[in-house]
Image 1 (spheres, rainbow over the protein chains, first blue to last red):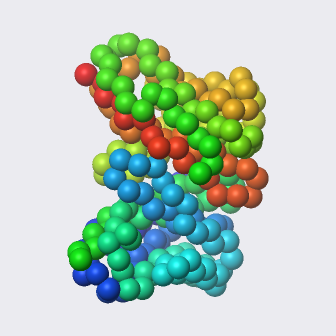
Image 2 (image 1 turned 90 degrees about the vertical axis):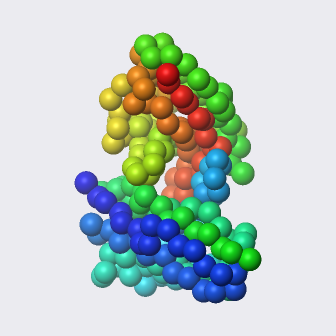
Length: 112
Length: 111
């Protein structure tokens, strides 16, 4: 079965700093999804990457997919307290994009 | 907001009792999912549905059953709850070739 490893597990940054979260798959990536979760709430969809080399941005968050490395990265520029939360990556399981396997998440704290 | 409502939002019950969680959607999405989220394990798929009366098992389906008699409702049942099923349960829905969208979760405690 596919496994996704996220690094780091937790991260504390000062407001205004840049940061990167990585998601590495044990198997070929057919599609990679990034979600954000605030404590006690559901997951909010951020971005979906489907092709090797694909890069997408939304406001100050950029996600990239490196198919050869079986890895995706999420980069936040000039972090703000509103970026704090748990970031989870999810990957299509076994080539079927209707089922996802998730990483365990990265807890981001942004200190003002 | 994908129009997903989970009920109840919180529940405390005793070991051995049956429990049913409901997921209701208003978007007419084909796919529906039940996950549980636990510290150290992350989010794990319990069961999913790809249409009315069409369901399949996920990664951690033992001790759970599901039913989908209408497009908008997906029920998760714990026939005889155990303490190991204490968790936060999330429902998600999806239409073809689109990402999954999640409900706000149900916090279930089994004493």
